[in-house]
Image (cartoon, rainbow, N blue to C red; front, side, top):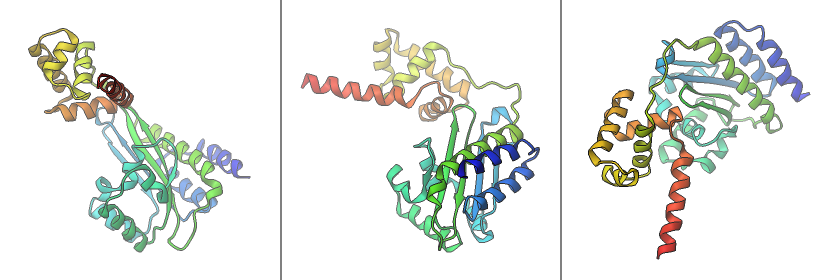
Length: 258
């Protein structure tokens, strides 16, 4: 029966031709799943669309006013947790994914006061293009329908794909591209090396490294190496595995020398 809910949603989605219809369909199916509310958010790289953000929800009006009025999106622990996992998670599990600050706990507490208890969030991140979430939530006095998480994840993923197709049709723009040498310089700087150290590793001059990094920043229209690293990670030009794997191997080499 539960699989049929996801199949039914996919079938109904074929008839959805607007964001308003998607909004209505999510409201209906969030109830079918045993949730009280839903929220879908999508952010797209500005080079690809004139509409950079989309938010659909049927949260209580009080919480919507607080969340939007105080621009809490940038402080939302749920959003931060989405950057650390590619599978759906309950809000009770957030602390297993990221450390929670006192402000995070306060924000979740305010949400409960405004009518939002626990939730199940489906994250999606397409490097260089978009990041989105689809959340299904319950009132404070109701438990999550744990037996339907897999179905909810399937529906959330389908909804996000549909929203991306409808609201953010790509234009002819392309993301910035770095040369192989620019990427190499950026990669070693992201690993914590200075321009001089990078020059030794690559067998080129220090000024050459500096110029490669300068041109890379200009291509991305950023003014510091930190912003350049973040942009390159977002676009998939360098990956977290490039940094984490190398860091671990360097620690092993250092341990072997001691």
